[in-house]
Every structure is written in C-alpha cells, then in structure tokens.
Image (cartoon, rainbow over all chains, first blue to last red):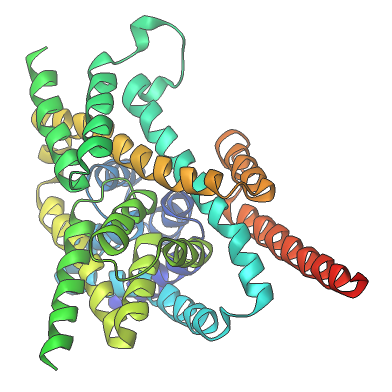
Length: 187
Length: 193
C-alpha cells in the first residue's frame, strides 16, 4: 500500500503546483516531511539542493528521490507517474481546446496577450539566474567585491558566441560549466 | 510508416537530450525547445511555440513535462505526446536514481560544485539569447499594448513576485479585450464609410 500512498501524495503535488518548480517546494515539503515523514527536514533540504544541481523538473526529481528511498525503483516510477498524471490530463484537455478553437477571435486575443507575457516570464527567470551567477546567494549589490567576475566573463562570452554563431545552447552550457569549473578549481 | 517512426525517434531523442541538460527547471527548457523545434527542425512557428508555452505555464505540474506533451501532441498526436513525456521524464528519473545512492558524496563534491557554478553563467546566457530574439520580435511589431504587457508582466513577476497564474490570467484578458475593441472599431469604421 506504500506505493499507493506515494502515488497519491505526488498526485496532489503535481495537481496543485501551478507555475513551475519553486511553487512545488512547499507542497513537497508538506507531503513528504510533515504528513508522511518519509524524509527528515535535513534530508529534504539536501533533496532540494540536489534537485537544483541536477537536470529536470524539481517535482520529478523529488518523486524519484523519495520513491527510491521508500520503495526502491518501483517507488520512484510510481511517484513520478503520480506527479505527472494530473498535468497530463489537464494539459491534454487544454491542448484539445486550443487546437479546436485556436482560430476563434477571442482565443486569438487571449493568445496575443499571452505571448509578450511569456517573453517577460522567461526574461525574469533569466535575470534571476544571472544574478545568482554574478552575486551568489547574497543578491544584488553595487559593491564590486561581491561581483563574481568569472561569471560575468563566462556570461558575456557565452552570449557573444550564441548571438554571433548560433551555436547549440547545450554545448554553450556544457562549455561554460567545464571552463568555469576549471577556473574555480584553480583560484 | 517508416517516416512516422523517424518522427517519433527524433521527438524522443530531442526531448531526452534537452531534458538531460536542463538545469534550472521549465524556464530553461523552453528556450532550448524553441531553438530545437522552431529554429532547427522548423516543425512549428515561433508564435505557436509561445502559445503552447502559455498553456504549459498556466497548467498544474512541471512546466517542462507540460510543454513536451503539447509539442509532442502538436507534431504527432497522442502517441507523439507519450513519446515526448517519456523523453522528458526519463533523464531526471535515471539521474536522481543514481544520485540518491550516494547523494552526500555528490552534494559535497568540489568539482561538481565548481562545474555547476560555471554552468549557471552559461544557462543565463542561453536564456538571455532567446529573450533578446523573442523580445526583439515583440518590439518590432510596434504594438503598444504588447510592449506594455511585456513590461508590466516583467515588473509583476520579477519585482513584485506576483503568482504567475494571476499574471497570465490578467494578460490574457487584456489581449482579448484589446482584440474585441479593435474589431468593434473596424466595424464602426466600416459603417461610417
């Protein structure tokens, strides 16, 4: 029955985390630490750190991590399926509506308002990551000492390469990880 | 049939590959998806990619999975959606399964931390690149309302930290109202002639 509990917990997490990764964290904590005590608070903090250090959505990362710990690989799979199940149903429904009615004027109007919004949301996320890379956890400050110049240089070089030669972004990210990593280890 | 299988394979490999390298959640994978499916493969238009992103963003659950589902569905129907979901979910499932076995060693490893720190700057650059292209296109349309929405949504999310769901709802309403006003105006202009 532990598998069913895992499924149901992550079903709720998937169902109520609207708006991406950060919105899911309090929900995961509530289910995994408070209600079921599958993880201690320290383990949960580790989980968030690891989830942010590894690729993939935070919901799926935590589903896998908790699932493996509680019930091995079947647990991981069940929790992950639970996490994406509600969104699959809702998004499929919305997709159906979208593809059926996208020619309607009202829908066209709504979408014309949403496109610039999405650009703004992506810009905001990008700026947040940029600030984390340049100033670290402390956040923005005009003090030159708090600026990570390695990050600024990597950012400028990477952006230049992307704009100028349209290189595959995955290579740019990996390259900046390897070059940046080497510099950080040397200094 | 052969052709269909090629599309599925391409969908699976593309989403698997993108998901495996997406550090930092949904907002990072969307620029990457845009590069891959709009710029490289040209399977859909930039406008449509943004529409799908809006749906993915305003639905519950991980944005990356939602966006993958919509892309897969748009390109190859329900089986396409299943393929892209699998491609998106497998990399984190595998990575986390492996890491959970020796996670404290991973968390405290200096090399891992240094590489991840270096990668942050690269991720920021990738997003900046896509924002410059997308934002440039919005500005080029010379449509005051769109520019206003873009600026307003940025302030609302970045400075005021308003929940994304509300921002999307409000901006969708503004867009619909604007279009209805335009239509009414066009009709009145037509009548007066």
